[in-house]
Every structure is written in structure tokens, then in C-alpha cells.
Image 1 (cartoon, rainbow, N blue to C red):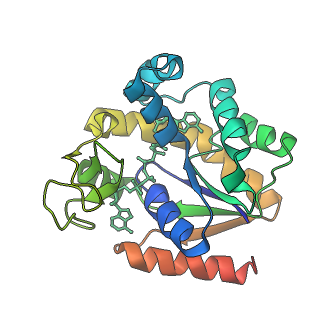
Image 2 (cartoon, rainbow, N blue to C red):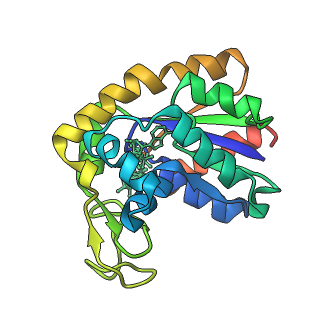
Image 3 (cartoon, rainbow, N blue to C red):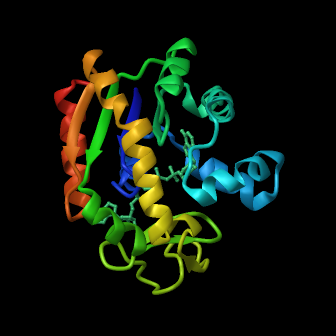
Length: 213
Ligand code: AP5
């Protein structure tokens, strides 16, 4: 199965991608995580992406398309994959089709802009393994340490209020048109991002079932 998760920053794409990945046994691929890892390791990709990431702008299409092309060619993607945060522009969606990787289903996670700031300002990620938490909605049982690896939990640099607003503006202008793009192709399902993570997961799984995938 090839699944795309669309949605505004903070709508819960990463959280749901991990949940579905566990359920279906296929990898979740987050372009944001790949870019952040590159930044942390100081690789040329990371250095090239730094300014875009910090300002809330999109990394250029050709860079992200190259990342995805390389990642989906890995053996663990043979049975399918979940794309979290890709495509984000029409050009990226067209590139995916040109790779022969049309998605079976595109799930759009819907959440009002007003709630997004609360979700993102309360998000904490593990500095060591990248696991994601929320101080209120999905806390670590170990307080400021990661449940999985005991690493320190920190706020993401782009989760500051001004950058969140910029990311939202970019989403509405460049990424939201993808909903119409996939609706016209009969592949779009919209799911409301609920207040509880597990409720959203249940809706996502029932959308997959309805689509008979
Ligand atoms: P990326 O890392 O993909 O960020 P994003 O799309 O802005 O999405 P987020 O990771 O912020 O949110 P999410 O929807 O995954 O929500 P989450 O599950 O964490 O991209 C970062 C940057 O990389 C971009 O700005 C861009 O520069 C670059 N980039 C990446 N891909 C690119 C591409 N294709 N093209 C160009 N540039 C690209 O949830 C958020 C919080 O809410 C968490 O704390 C979570 O615990 C909590 N939460 C989740 N679900 C619920 C729920 N149901 N109820 C309550 N709380 C919840």
C-alpha cells in the first residue's frame, strides 16, 4: 500500500504515520525528519536546507524529490510506505507519479489553524531518537525524558509562534491545492484530527478499510 498523509503543520501527520506504520508493518517516511537528521549531522543537504527550515519555508522541490526517490528505493519499501509531509507542492506530486508511485490513498488530516499553535507549542521531540510527544495530549511517562530511549525532550526550533504562522501560510498557499489535485483523481479522503490521538487513529484506520486497501 502506498499512502500519503496530507495536512497542515501540527495536524498530526507524524503521529498518525507512526501509528499506521506499526499497524500495517510498512515504513513511515517523513521528509521533515530526514531533513532534520541531515541538519543535525551537518551534511551538505542539511546545510542547504537550514535557512528554509528555520524560516518555515519549503525546501526546493528538486532537493526533496531526490530525497524521496532515494528513500522509496530501499528494500523496506517493497510492500509499500506511508509518506508524511510529501508531496507538498503540485510539482512534487507530479514527480511522484513520474516515479511510477501513484498513491493508493491520500488522507488529509483536518484541523483548524487556531488549534495548531497549541498543538505545536506543546510538542516535545526526543533529541536522541526523534520520537514525538505532547505535554498535555501525549506526554512521556518519564517526564522530560523519552519513553523509548531516555533521551532529552526538547521543542523543535520551528515551533516558535512566528515560524508556526509562516508555516501555516505556506501550507495554505502551496500545499492545500493538493487536496483538489487528489480529489479530482478520486484518491482523497478527509479525516478530522480529533482531540485524542487514538480517536484519530481509529478514524484513519476506518478510512483505509472503507477504501478497501
Ligand atoms: P515537517 O517536519 O514535515 O513539519 P510539518 O509538516 O510542519 O508537520 P509537523 O511535523 O509540524 O506536524 P505533524 O502534522 O507531523 O504533527 P505531529 O504528529 O507532530 O517539515 C518541517 C520542514 O521541513 C518544513 O517546514 C519544510 O521546511 C521542510 N520540508 C519537509 N517536507 C518537505 C517537502 N515535501 N517539501 C519541501 N520542504 C519540506 O503532531 C503535532 C503535536 O500534536 C504533537 O505534539 C502531537 O503529540 C500532538 N498531537 C498529534 N495528534 C494529536 C491529537 N489527535 N490530539 C492531540 N494532540 C495531538
